[in-house]
Structures are given as C-alpha cells and as structure tokens.
Figure 1 (cartoon, rainbow, N blue to C red):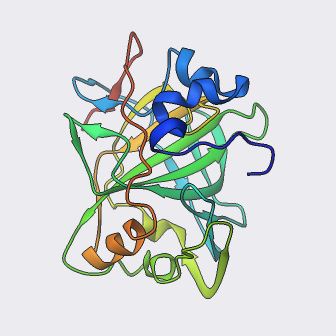
Figure 2 (cartoon, rainbow, N blue to C red):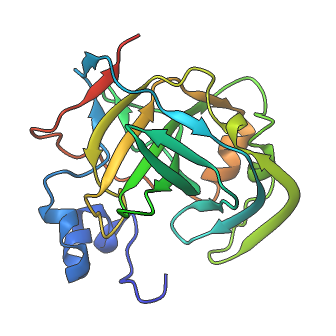
Figure 3 (spheres, one colour):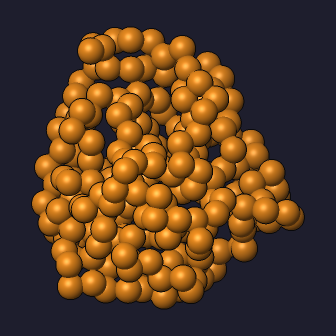
Length: 230
C-alpha cells in the first residue's frame, strides 16, 4: 500500500527481517504476543460461543500484492464475549499460517472484524484443505482471482458469507497480532477447528498467484491458548 515500506515473504524483505524494514514494523521483531502460532496443548474450557450474523456482499476481489482480498459491504458481524465486531474483509494465505500440532493446512482464510468503539480486531481463521469438488460458495471468488498486483475484479455473483464457514464452529482462541507488518498486537484470534474443503483446482488457482504468503509460527510464550469444550 502507498506509504508502506516494501515487505514480502522471501529474502531480505521476508518475515525474519520485517522488524528492521521500518520503525513502524518494530513489533514484528520485538513483540511478545505475535501470530500465527502452532496450536497444541490448548486448555479446554467452557468459552463463549461466536455468534455469526453474516449476510450477502458484492464480490469485489483484489490482489493486494501480498494476498487475495475480498472487501465486504453491508452489516455482517460477529458477537463475541459481549462485543460486536464488524466484518471488514477476508483474505487468504497458503499454506495455512496457524498449524495444528505442527501440521499446516493447504490454505487459511482470515475474516477480519473490528470493534468500531475500541478499534480492536477479531480475526476468525478458517483452515482450508483439499476435498473432492469445488466449494460452491467460494467459487465466485476462486473463479475470479486477479493475477496482477493492484487489480480488482468485480463479479456479478454476490457472496453468501455464511456459506463460507464450516457448519461446526467450535474454536481455539488466544490474544495475538496481525500476521503481516506492522504486526500490531491488537487481535483476538478465533481459529475455527473444523476445516473447510476446497477443490484441488480452487487451491491451485490461488497458489498459482501466491504459492507462499504465510508467516512462520511465533512463540506462544505465557499467553493462554483456549479451546471450546465440546
């Protein structure tokens, strides 16, 4: 984006060097609550469920230069722990940024929400794995991926946002950060533990553009990692 120091996923501008690319990115190196993490040994507790209130949105797909992003219009939101977070956009990483017991999924989707009062973020992560056929609700996105950075493709097909979620919505949660510069530590992570299946062709359509746009996992440290008790 305009005004940002250039960063990427390889070499001198890769994740190991993000903290030195700009004073604004210092948290990428010095932060103590960074994301993503490896999910293991979570404490099982009776946690507050996520209430999803998702509608439909026009399908506007942008290649940001770092990922494929879909900007959301309308009043879609989640309620979590008494706070209402508005859905702003969702985007993708390949392979998944969060890992489960050291294992990455083919991709991960991040649904970025914001509390308009505090500015705090809640990001719902969904692991995406290969299945037998196309996922119909994701098809309008993966059928219109712009290959060139900065390009936006607008499709006549609107998106049913609730159809992008798994039916089972239990989750892991921890306090963390953005997984891209400036790595701000203002994110409540809600990682759904049921993956969504895409076709091999849908995954290949994304990885043909971004084969590796995943930040390596970061230390959990003394943070709490919790999981909904089934």
